[in-house]
Length: 628
Image (cartoon, rainbow, N blue to C red; front, side):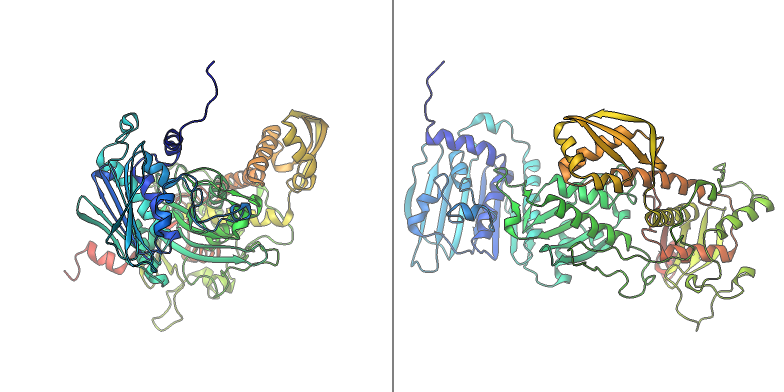
């Protein structure tokens, strides 16, 4: 075996470059972070051949002193931290002092800078392995310009892994997009091969921010997004930004941007919290779109996890997870036709504990007083699936109407129905009170769709999907009031787990009791399940316990049991909802519309399919070429 020896500085820098500099986009990311840390308000990026031949970045930041220019190209040289305490609460984007040294070791780098106090600018050059810094005077305004040429010119093996010019430029453009989303107060300009690609001016108002979002993500995103801004004073957390409606889901997770103190991150705790918040409303295989910003004390998040700084570690991961989940869950739950909820009912409220509370909306026909739904209460309907068949028999229609009457109070004023509506409903006069958001029913199409008229035009409602969501939300509310009931197992079940998981189960018995389980530790890595929730008596209890423990280890919390119960309730609601080919009267259709306006997440059924859509008068006019 050869003797141990120290690596040369050049080789050490090239090894570090393998972690920091993956492609031209990595170079642009590191240089942009330095510019923003220097206080730049305008950044110009000019690239050639996707950044492989040339990357030139100019900013109007504070600049670098003449005496620090050569030192800036040395490894572990930085102005952003001085001692260990600074590392424990990093407020800047960069701090490791590796970027410029790594870039200069695999490219020809020129750094030109001038501070406000200096009379002239100075320039330093470094090329490849030799890395001999050459300092000379130059002409330059206040700020810094970094020029990187011939990336990987001295490492041919790395250059072979580069993709086509257009592919590399798309990655680079994505980096610019992320930085532009993180700093609305900074101007960004991007040129590729002499052609202007992006020109973004600084913005300071919410309307202007939305215009920048539209230019970067497309106008459809901002049209289908909801703005939120929630703070928890007790924990010092603030979450704000935009989340896409469930109907604006995407086939890929390509419009998911999450920033922590201005730094874009990819974190499993955040991803898990967002995915849970969107459960129940996304169609299978689809991904939500969002641009979210989390602000918290820098001391509560560790950014020194990976050289690329994309990963972070929260000191209170469970607190962060619950805050993100509860905030998004409430906002998504409050999504319903505009005007359906009294002003202020859906506003974000924060408890003294710091966790945002869920505003509960009382809907007609909801079960209260601790009562729970049983499967026998929901009549099971059969459907042939043939939309073109004739209407059902009079007996079947009466059974359906009677079943729906069991689920809501027809004469309740909250439904917007007038006395005597059971004998028929008249459309309101022109000077009557303003029509509700979903309007009033006018017909039913093939026993499948409800047609309604509102102020905007025509509303089409999927009868089964809408009723399925209404029944499902009421069953969940009833279940929450009745809580989870347990039943003892005739033969207790033993399961083997890791010692860490067994410790968690022993430390948090109240968590499992709240979920309906009673666990006992029988050994270092053995647990015994003695009680399970009544509704999950036939489920795979050991697997559920293992899944909950795995979530607790990784995320600090778990909703596995709630999800399993919700899945069961969703199946019951699907069977209990009105089926196709069931004819509803006008009063019944109006009652369904009013219930949709009062029900959380009524825009999607339990499987994520949309429940209603709006056709405006302009859209209808275009179909018939009116006014053209």
